[in-house]
Amino acid sequence: MHELIEHGALRGLLHEARLRPRSGPLEILDVGSGTGKWAIWVAAAYNDAEVTTIDLLPITAVELQEYPNLHPKSPVDFTRDRWADLRVDSFDLVRLALLCGCVPDWPRLLSTAFKYLLPGVGQIELVEIDHTPRSAPEPFPIQSLVFVQWWEYLKEASNRAGLPMEYREDTERLLEDAGFVDISRKRIRCPYVGHPDDKHDQDTADWLANAVRSFEGDDERGVRDENMNAFVALSMFHFTTQFGWSEQLVKRLCNDVLQTTRPQTTCPREYPLYHYM
Image (cartoon, rainbow, N blue to C red; front, side, top):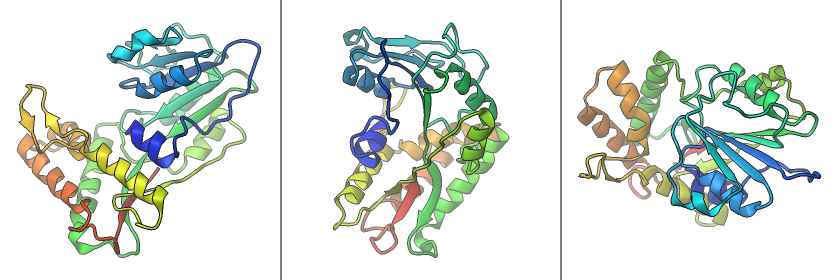
């Protein structure tokens, strides 16, 4: 998904925040770093900055050894009020990306992030995908209604688990309540089928398609599984634990959803399906 964000939607930018130079090295924190891909890119781009990552699981990328300015920390539960031994009031940029479905209490997380920022100049950048399926023009094409059904299931199951997948439309108010000022919001359309006359639209669609299908391949036992995709990755835990569904049922539903996103089948150009970021 990081390729979709940086290379597709953000047109090659690693971040939108404008970092201000200061006497010492910039301090950048990636919260919930996952594979560490974004942090590695930033460490390479800003070799005079100190880049720190926190997450429950360690980063396993072999590139870690190439960047002495990259400092991964794990296990760190970023949903708590204290982030390991990190210093408060110290970071120029705190980045939170793709955390919908991982955060039980957004006000608490944003308040914690605020106290780790350098007073007066530190910035936070939130990057999330609003997984709500949309279609233009309305109404939603009947051949793609399984996509809507899947999303309603996922919202219900993740809410039951206390880890809602739905993007919070009141995020700007939550940021204000946490103490942030000068808040700006940018919404980017991410289609499954790009318009042939719009290169950015087409590029974003290509990156989204790659991101959705990037899970296809070997399962944890090393067995080839053609039914693995991003919809399965988002759904499997919630649908099996909250609804009691079998893995086969989850994969069958998610494969039906995947088919609706394929161009020239159930996702024609006149009814493009898309998300917002």
